Picture 1: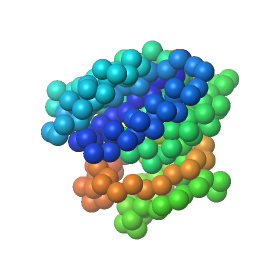
Picture 2: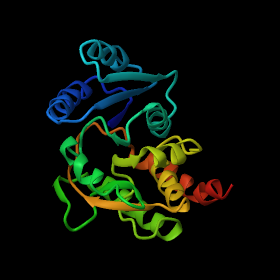
Picture 3: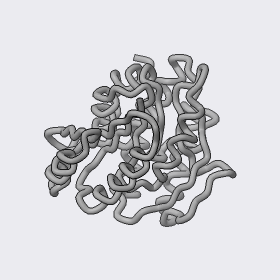
Picture 4: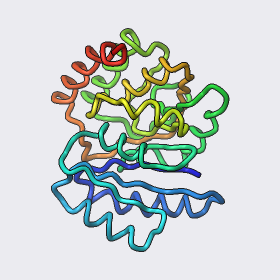
Amino acid sequence: MLSIIVPAFNEEQRLPATLVRMRAYLDGRDEEYEVLIVDDGSSDNTLTMSRELAKDWPQLQVLALERNTGKGAAVRLGMLAATGEHRVFSDADLSTPIEEVEELRARLVGNCAVAIASRALPESQIDVHQPGKREVMGRTYNRLLRVAALRGLHDTQCGFKAFTAEAAIACFTPLKTLRFGFDAEVLLRARRLGWTVAEVPVRWEHKEDSRVSAMRDSLGVLYDLVRLRFIVRR
């Protein structure tokens, strides 16, 4: 069984089209699945709209955080509530197409318990690039992260990652980083537990109306980077 977790904060405009595309793809496959929308304390109509869609879609579940806590908190809630053998989280804008999910799942064999979509590999297909400042921010953060904690991984922030059920439970249960730096903590935990993390080239395109602020969130993720090693050691 496959579980898809979609964290959502003020996504009433983009989420309906995303869910239509996901359902068309997932219904066309010969496998049981579930989709879990996790509302991160939205102030718009995201939660109500999601619950309405769930009335006519048995495989869709809607979870909600009482207040805006962060993307990491939303993904954590979905990962631990999911029941699939493979658990994938996807950004609500589908910058990485849902069809890429099988490329990641194919890597979850043997000692490999985590597979992450990557925009930085030569084989990746970037149809629309991010604005210059945001792309520079991402590259700088990933370069620092490789030096400090995650050698060999070139793109830890792409919002499309797959986990075995065992790895999802082990890595997300103790999660301390609840906002945008959570990916790095989860990947570091996976490696510390002895699992391989596969970096997979994918198709990707930038979507407007990003929830990431280049200035505000760059400071936040750098702070998370400094404390990351201490969190996992404890």
